[in-house]
Image 1: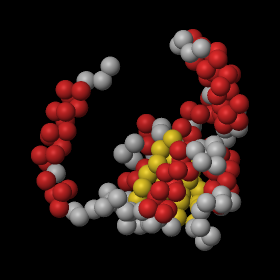
Image 2 (image 1 turned 120 degrees about the vertical axis):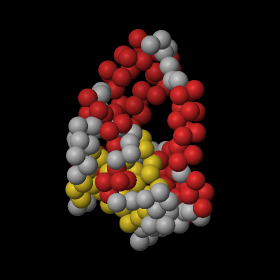
Image 3 (image 1 turned 90 degrees about the vertical axis):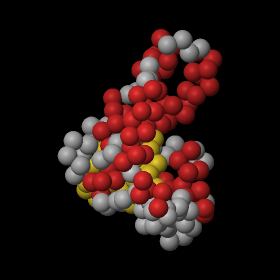
Length: 181
């Protein structure tokens, strides 16, 4: 269970140490006109943006399990559409990472775990086809990055000329490598 008192106390210390933040004049529009879609892996927290040289206010970072886009209008696509038409991004960088935990999952194992935690079989059946398509397609992080970049490049709701790129990050060292897609 989280310790909210500790979080609130650490937040007070942070705010006291950073009075300059309110004076930065930042908006929701990223100054670099870039959105990054990456994994929610804890090893990337606080590292990814710094390792790539981005500061607060310069980019939008969208995190999801396995940096995957699964449907023509899933939450990632919705977020990218808002970023494109509402926040004026021009480029999207999909970043996978080495040793992704998603590689270890299969839809069958995942559904068994759900059953063990008391989720009804009817509820599981409701999501089973999408879960299988998403989770069992994900076996190699780099291939998932390529798939996602191609999916977004051919998506009919993004403007022609918008840039979609891919890369991989080592979560232990912060090393980034570009993937030609």
